[in-house]
Amino acid sequence: MTENNVSDNNANTPEHAADATQPTQGQRLDGNEAVNRAAEQAKTTSTRNITDLLDLPIADETANLRYGPNLHDGLLALLPLVGVWRGEGQANTVVDGEYNFGQQIVFSHDGENYLKYESRFWKLDDKGKPAGPDLRESGFWRINEKDEIEFICTHSTGVVEIYYGNPVSERAWELQAASTMVTATGPAELGPGKRLYGLMPNNDLGWVDERLRDDEFVPRMSAQLQRYAG
Image (cartoon, rainbow, N blue to C red):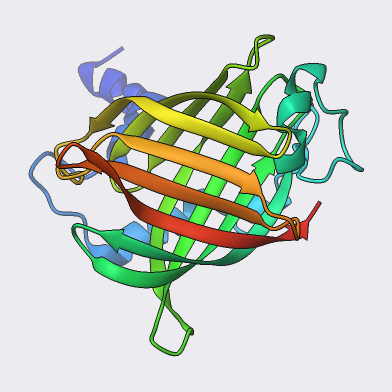
C-alpha cells in the first residue's frame, strides 16, 4: 500500500469528513455557507419546533390538575399555584425606573416532588399596549414535610437566587433569598430579595418582589394575574 493510498483511505473516515466541513483556524465562515450547512444538517428536523416535543418516554408536564400525572402528595401545600396565570404589574427598578409590564407565570408539574416555574414579562407603553419583551425567570419550587419551601430562581439578566420560606396560609406563601448570585454582566445593583405570593379574594394571583436598598426592603415589582389555564 502506497503512502498516497493511505491518505486516500483516511479521507473517507467520518473524522476526516467532519473536519473537512469545518473552517480552518483563523478562517471566517461565510454567512451564506453557514446557512447552507445549517439547512443541510436540519433536513430531517426542520419541520419540528418545541411545541412538537411531546414524545418523550416519560410523563408530560401539566399546568392543569385535571390532566396528566397526579400531583405528588408532597406538593399539596402548593397546589393552588398550579396553573397558567396572566396579567399586568408595575416595576420600579434601579436600571429602568418605573414602568408597567405584562406577565405570564406557569406553575406546572410532572408527577415528581417539585413544581416547575416559568415567568415571562413584556413591557407596556403608556396606552397599555405591548412594547417588547422584558425579563424572564425559570426555576423550581420544592417543599418538605415541615412546610419549608425552597425556590431556585434563575433570571435572564444573569442572576441566580435561592429562596427559603413557608406558607403564610393555605393561600399565601412568603419567601426570602438566602443567596443571590449575579454574573459579570448581570445587574450589580440588585440586592437580596423577598417575595410574597398569594391568592386574592377574587382568586387572582398577586405577588410582590422587594429588594434590600439602604438597609430597607422596598417594592421592586408586583403584579395581579388572572388564571388563564388550569
